View 1 (tube, rainbow, N blue to C red):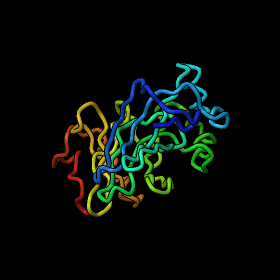
View 2 (view 1 turned 30 degrees about the vertical axis):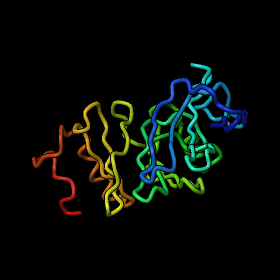
View 3 (view 1 turned 135 degrees about the vertical axis):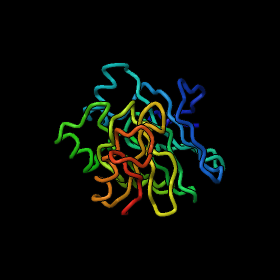
Length: 203
């Protein structure tokens, strides 16, 4: 495994976490603490904050088990969840800050969304590295537990809170549906009550 910035072999993975194997068993996602990032990254307010607080950067990488090559998985630091893979192993979903150099990063900085709680849900193509923003502003309930699994219709159920049953969001592209679904944020489990409708009714 090679460090994507120093371009040297990694012999020790301090505090490796968020380990996630693709369904086809060919790619491994993980994060580890590195002591350096590109100078360009340090201009990002969140990266700057992380550097000032702990002087280490949680780096996201993908390791190809066939070729034994590793490469950068996402252009920012800190993944706030263990990624969820698509069934075809071509992409994965994660909650994190917008990628460095993207229009999403510029929007977040403009809107002062630079704190640890200001994360978004992204879909990343594992082959090309292309990124798609699925949902901006993931609700901050107990450190963004993240997406759970993928639905056949393209929905992305995401749980927030220490207990997954505390909140269930079906993250979809339809903004009107998102607003209605996010109205159940404070429901303790999804049940049929006047104040906590069953998700999917009227969809």
